[in-house]
Image (cartoon, rainbow, N blue to C red; front, side, top):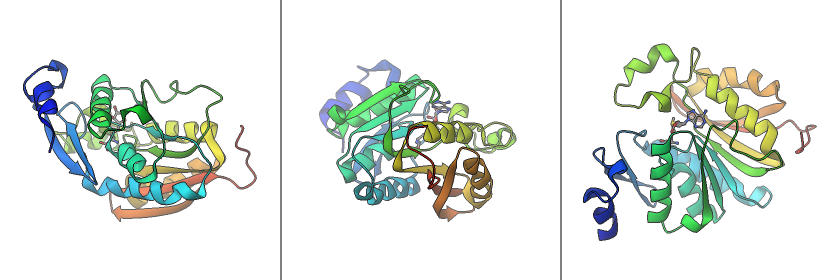
Length: 231
Ligand SMILES: C[S@@+](CC[C@H](N)C(=O)[O-])C[C@H]1O[C@@H](n2cnc3c(N)ncnc32)[C@H](O)[C@@H]1O
């Protein structure tokens, strides 16, 4: 449950920009606030946080980078499980406000750096991350109307659904540490297949994948063995 402080701030109206029918949901060990301006947290995606925490002991030190963080829950839960610091990037101001609120409510705001920016411009050229979590919009534009409840910027992945997936791969190619791991959410086995050749061109490799169902999957992307961590 949220404390009285949360209800005073949000439900009593002290933070008017968060007042589009605010809701809350359990996500792993966290209590996450959101409203209709961001994607409703999907319980299955806790798998991405748990997988990141499983990988954390086998990669180098440093913060987790979360691309397309929305209300922030996937990265925040990974931080709670792994004890790492977190850099979160989302271009939507409403998403960044919820990410900040949710970090605060989880008691880990001092470990989270939230950057409200496009993923292509949010990082300094010299920044490297041992773990990247990415959850881009991946629905082809033609299918977006199937999801009327979801904000369009959160789900519209362009003509083939791959526009922001490609941008995430570019960030991974530029900012993943040499032994690092990038967990990239895609639209099921169909997009996993497309991802293999897109990764190869960067040069990255899809090292593993966990499929939730026909429309939901997470790929583990690494640098190709001969590729350096300093492109
Ligand atoms: C599929 S939603 C995921 C949000 C969150 N991870 C979740 O599970 O609810 C994608 C998020 O990516 C953000 N986004 C889309 N394109 C972006 C870009 N080019 N740069 C930064 N954020 C972007 C959207 O604002 C949205 O919050």
